[in-house]
Image 1 (cartoon, one colour):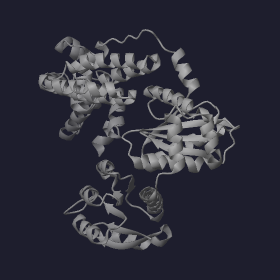
Image 2 (cartoon, one colour):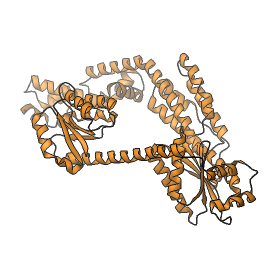
Image 3 (cartoon, one colour):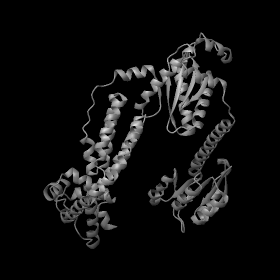
Image 4 (cartoon, one colour):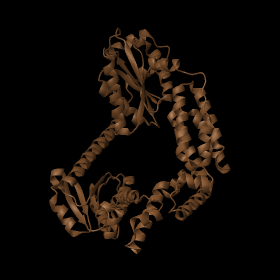
Length: 514
């Protein structure tokens, strides 16, 4: 049974939920209740529940504060948040702490039961995953070098071994020399520890089932298998290995698969798979690479590559992060499509990077230059892209801050103009930008949205409706056509009424009655 803590400052709701839910049915037990966040946190420290169901609005410490504080000390605790309709947006801030379940009041057993069952399933899956990782570590502590692993290392790295040597070890491997074999070479995406290499080797042996030899060699895992009669089935198993390993360690892997050959040519198969792994540079994530894939990539290469640097530099310089990110994404997508030689690809990246960091603050340029050697050493294009993405974000945001004073001045002028021309039927973004401020309307629109959070037209609409409600409040006898004329709708009071109803939920006449 998983322990549940129920928190709500309203006794009637606390008692109602406590009695309403059949806790044992959901493999849980209600071990404690609390009337506010402070009591709840004390209970969490003492009882260490697995699940907390909490209201969002409470005295002392509210539900969101409880989630945040618990996340720091007990990150394994799962939350279900109860909130009123008006509090939902506030409650959703708990997402940053991993909270996925929100229930609107009033609730019932069915609404609570669904999230409870889902969380219990997640907790059980976590326990299974932790048990697997713990098991891997336990086996790792006990394992000793195996003779088969050492033999495979020797045969793929030492060119002095040949057919006679394989014949010597054939009885040990219980393998027929007449059958061709294939070599699988695994490379993990990320900083791989021996524990992860050991784990993926074991997963591969378990899923494939008929592996002849398997070993780790440097940062790689080698698995020798008989050439299957069904290559599609082998590809499926390789994908299962990737997915299983990723579910336990949150890491991906690139896998090179050799062509079939006699077992005594294992060294040649190893060289073939190493060459295949070179092409993982162009993969966004791990995947399977064969000799046919490398041939296709080589045929698809272009001799020339062109990308206008200003396509990226202009939005960075002006502080427009979204446009800068889109331009950088376009740059890397075109590099992937070009499939240039890896050295040549890196040269284009370094050139773009140097142009970019020249826009940085002079005090930061030196730090950016220090990244160049590490970029050159990177063996995956998506890793290089991540470095440039970080630089683009930092430099663009810095540029935005530099320009912010100028942006705010434009927006303040625009708001003053809106209030001044609120009753003008010609009031529009184009009118303000072109006739009064003499700047590009699209540019002004982006500045206005960034600073106010609303589009120009939405802002004007809300202001006009607000003004209309104030005039109605002070003069209940005011005519609809007068409101329309005063607020820039000219001689079209019907359209004004439609806009008013869409925004307020009722017509001006109905609003006057209310």
